[in-house]
Each structure stands twice: as C-alpha cells, then as structure tokens.
Image (cartoon, rainbow, N blue to C red; front, side):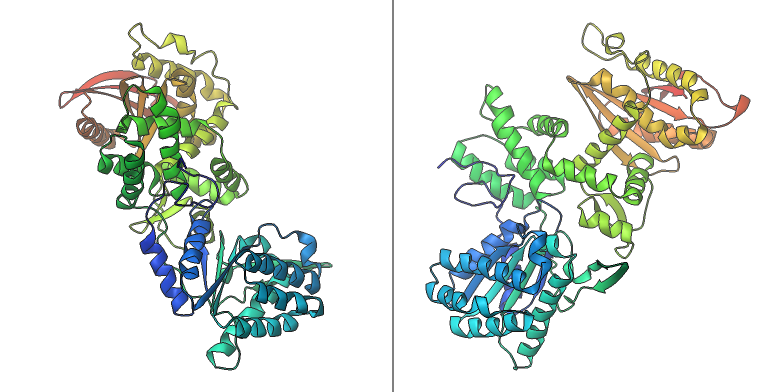
Length: 526
C-alpha cells in the first residue's frame, strides 16, 4: 500500500507517514493506568482523534482493558429531547463498537436491557452491571464531546459519570475505570447556557473531577524528523532531514495539520515538477506560498473564529499589525478563547500568534479586507514597477504609495489612517507581487513598534520596514535597527516607510536616500 501525508481525520501508520508520538501516548496511558478521568482539549486538526486511536490500539493489546472509543459528532439535536432517546443512542453507539470488536456476549447483555432504561439512574445501574460482566477495566473515550456540551441533558450524563467515579473511589460502586473526553473546549471549565421559556440559566460543568492533561501535542523539530525518516526510506528521497524539520517547525510551531499539509504539498505538487528527487528549504518556502493561497477547512475555521469574535479580532490585529505586547494570562477570556482556537500561544509570558503561517494568513486576510474597501487601481498597476530584468523597482513602488496616501489622506479620517496605515501598504503591494512574489513579516518590538516585511519576487528579496514617527532620535535609532536587520539577512539595500501622523505644517511628504554603515536605505514619509 502506498503511503501519503494525511490531513483529514485519524492517521494510521499503515497508510500514512506519521510523526512518532509514542512518548505522548505513553503519558496519556499513565493517566489511564492511574484510573483518571481527563479531557483532551486542543484546537481543530491537532491530533486528538489520532491520539485516541493509538491509545485504543495500545489498550486492546492488554487483556485487562476493554477500550471503548466512540464519537458524539453525529448525535443530532432531537436526541437530546429526552433521557430515553439520548440513552438509546449512546448505548447503540457502544453496541456498534462492541460488535466490531466481537464482544457478542456484552452486546447481547446491553440489547436485553436497553428498552427498560428510562433515566440516568437506570443507565448508571446498567454501567455497573456492564463493567462487572466485562471482567475488565473499561475505558470510555468520547471524541467531539463539546458538540453536545451546550445541553442540560448532557450535563446530567456527565454528572452521573462523576458521581459514579467518586463512589468507586470510596469502594461503593463499579464504573468505567477511566473516561477521556476529547474536543476543542475543555468541558470541565465550560459554562453552559440553556434557555427555558424566557429564562437563561448558567450551569458550571460537573466535570470538575478531571485530571489535567498537560501533554504537549504539537510536534518538535526532532519529532518531525521521525516522519521524514520514514518517508525518505520509503520513497528514496534525498534531503537534509534536520534542516527540513527545523524549517517545517519554523513555519508551523509544530501545529500537526500544518506540518502534514506542507509535507503533502511538497511531496505531491512540488516534487513531481522537479528534475531531482530531493527536498530543500526553498521547496518548503514554496509549499508555504501554495498553502497560503488555497482555501481549506483549517483556514476557514481560523477566519470564522476571528469574524465571530470581534474582541478576539481586535487583539489579534493589535498584535499582528501594531506589534503590541500583551502579557499572557489564561484567565483573560479573550486570550483563553484565542488559545483554545489555536491562534495564541504563550511565549515567555507574552501572547504570540501560534505560528508564522497563521500570522501570515491573518495578515493577508486583513490586508485583503482593506484592498477591497479602497480603490488603488490608479496607483498600483503591476506593469509600472517590474523591470526588464524581472526585478522590482521598489523605490518607484514607495513613491507611488506615497502619492496614493497623499491624495487619499483627506478622504479618510485620521483615526482610520493611523490604525490601518500599515494594512494599506500591505494591500497596495499585493497586486504588484501577486503570482510571483511572496511577502512575509518579522515583527520586532521596539520604541517605534517596527514591522519588517521581507518581500521576495522571483529570486530577489526586498526588506521594508514600517514605523510611526516618534521624533528624530527614535528615527535614527530605527535606521540603525534596520541596518542591523540588513546585516543579519546579508542584504545591502533596505526601504523605510515612515508614518507621520503630525498635523498641519509639521507633516512632510518627503523622501531621501541615506547611507548608514555602508547600507543604502531609501526612506519615504507618508
């Protein structure tokens, strides 16, 4: 069977190239062996289902365990109309798992009881009898559990499991040895709103018995290497595994879907067009470009979460566009929801966008919204700026952008310009480099809130810095910082856009060419 890089659903080692996550599974197994109930809450496409699948296989190989892995994904709303319908559907899902695993005696037992169950107490008694009859440690794993979370009947179900768990500890009941709930949200911290006539009641989830699941499910560069080693052995592909793994981690910060997606693009789209059977760093760069141009469920979810949460959108904007530093505090609801959705991460106590691909995707998406709201057609026609040798006349680009800003300044209020000035340049440059170019930014916090943009067009690179005017002293410091950046990237020429929001005669629409420590910098004020 030909293997491939999988980006949908559960990963199976016989069919897919997989990162070795055995150490992560071992940590989850330790919780099961200790009889803990716990939740695995991670963003979409972060490996939750694969983790449950691998854990299930491991438990199947141990005679003392009976693992039951089910999903609540397809349970519809009418199922929650009453206890009888929910109990029946829940047990029918359990029966299907038991039948698949040839546990016919247990199937017959449940089928003989199912029509007699009317409430959660009846289900509780059945669970006790079922566990006793199995003669094993039964582990219940429920995937996609938060799809059912906003429902009082589901709370009743969790409450029943909790009560049995506590009684089992006291030796007064018999129930599932371990229960694992997997979903995006952490059910134990969920507050639910249930409407009853005209009242809205808030309930805290009864899942406060759950142990913390502290396993880092993102992939390290070393873990990514394990997948690439399997791939090159199978396909006889050449690559510097360590370099490629580091490059993949650089862009993705180990987000499982993004790692697999970049590998899939490189293997299936980029490699076939090459004359050599080899992966290099430029291939990964190209894969990132392709990924950012396509529409997929991961990017759609990211944009949807931003659009549906205005406060989250605002904070993300401040971080990406203004380089704002925000202290990471998980108790802040906005930061918490951003972390749950995989948008934020804690980096040395500060909030950061989880990975560079998300940062670029959001940055492109936000600039596109500006691009479609303001007409720039008379200014950024691509043919004006591409030279015969296929370089970009970047001095001309900046002068044209300055012209655009000067003529449009009076048409937009100052608050809009100050907040969106950076986005306007990003929107301006897009049509010029579209197709052959690629822009990526490196945010660096300084006195002037600098945002460096690295633009590639074919084989050429252009370093652009955007900053707000904070006075002559800060400007000189900014020039030195840009020179330092040029030195680190081995470039001799850089560009600087200064956003000057002073009023009246203080504002200057000027440009200048300056040499600082042997580096040529072209500056425009807008």
